[in-house]
Image 1 (spheres, rainbow over the protein chains, first blue to last red):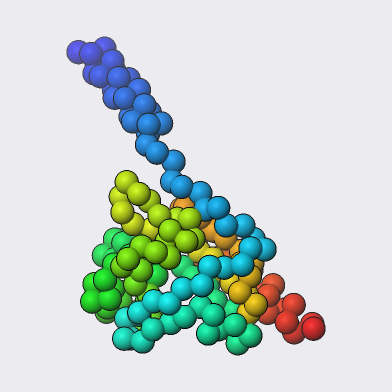
Image 2: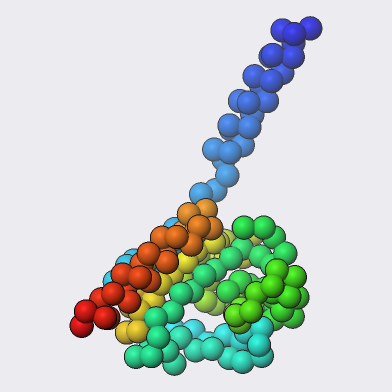
Length: 73
Length: 86
C-alpha cells in the first residue's frame, strides 16, 4: 500500500519536473543597460496620455510592467 | 503598465488602492518594443526598467525578480546621488 503510494508520488514528481522543464522560458529582453529606451505614448487610468520622451531632461522614469490586472504579484 | 484596457486597469487600481496612473499597452506595441511580450500568453512578462532623464536604460529587472522593488529603488537612489554630486 505504502509502496504503491510512494511510487505514485515518485512518478508525480518526475512528471512535474518534466512539465516544468518543458515550459518555455520567458523571453529575455534584447534591451541592455545603457541602451536608449524605446519611446512610447500610452493612455493611463487618469485618462491622460503619457509619452516617455516628454520626461526627457525632466525626470527619471520607472517603467514597471506587470502581467495582468486582478492577479497577484 | 500592463496590456489590460484602461477601464480594467482603473478597476484594478481602485481595488488595490493605487493612486498613481497605470498605463495601458492594449495594442502590445510597447511590450514588444521592450522585448517582454509573451507570445503564447498574449501579455507582457513582468519587468521593471529604470530610464534616466536622458532616456537611457539604467536598470532592468526581469521575471520574478521584478516583484521585489528593492533593486530598482537602490538604482533610483544611485541615480539621484549622481545628480546631487554633479
